[in-house]
Image 1: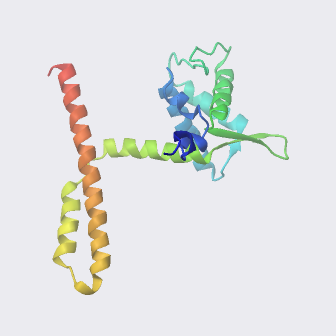
Image 2: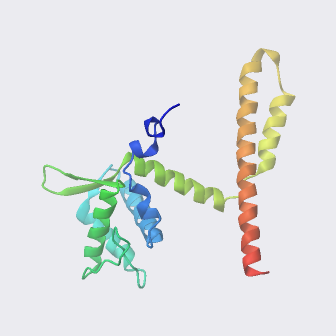
Image 3: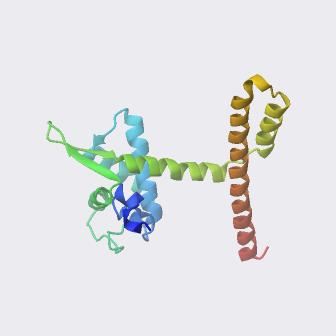
Length: 194
């Protein structure tokens, strides 16, 4: 029997506290800041940005909100004097948790970039949001399977069977997701007692 600790595990690849910022009291703020950092880096055309530039950018972004509470690693409010200092502390927290990396270049400036794991996780989280917001056309999946079966030829059998399996998997996953969304919707209705 294998020992559980000998199996490959996500925490062998990422920082063990990486998800702590997504379960803290300020998890919404943390997620929004990380997405803003990702968007800023994406629009810069580089794979990193000057730390002072990202602090200024996040400062301007945070000023558009009233009463933002920035929490530290222990989930206690950050008591820094100004918003820029709070953002600096938050960036250090993101670095320590493995979301960001900080490098010192030859020009003696510090640069911030997202880690590989952070990029993948943010991409997955954004895809979850997109799927929740967009309606999926289930008839399209069904019609795709029907069309493949209708035009089935024996000399392309292997290729067509692979396409059918792929389309079936997509339909199945979409229906499972629909089931979950229906349950969430019903739960919201019952909580509101509509």
